[in-house]
Image 1: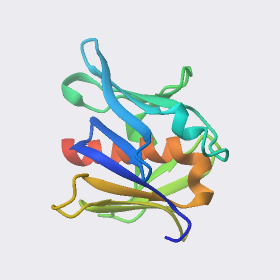
Image 2: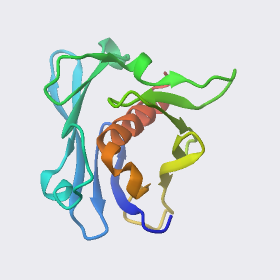
Image 3: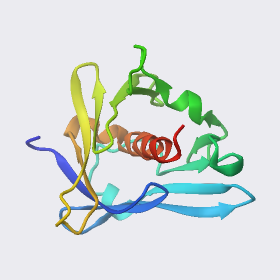
Image 4: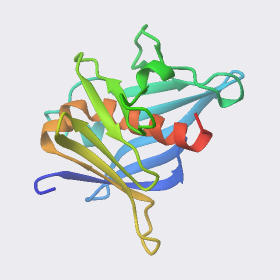
Length: 173
């Protein structure tokens, strides 16, 4: 995707990894921040990286509150009070047997991830906003996330939904 932004994903654990840009700047960190008794994972958009991209809007982080035995729980953006159930946050595709998942951004618009085990595409209607693809085995990073410039305003929400999709695949939800 010409003119796109590329982030390299280091680590293959959906609950613990990081995204780094092409200049080796840390863009996002995904890590466990609590366990009381269920895990709480935080996705943090790193401020040093986000200051380089003035079109970025929205929250700096999101929290994934899991239920018992890593069942689905809810997501909270920033310090917000709105708890979005994970099952609602990633709604199934409209056709029977579809692996696509829809999510709603805080702007009220719905977006879709076309899901695959090694490649996913985030789309707005027919326009591809971002792709995530597992890298070749000889690379030192696990995957590449490519974001179109017009999707940068939603980058935290796109990254949050990507992480949740990968968790859902890993845990068989």
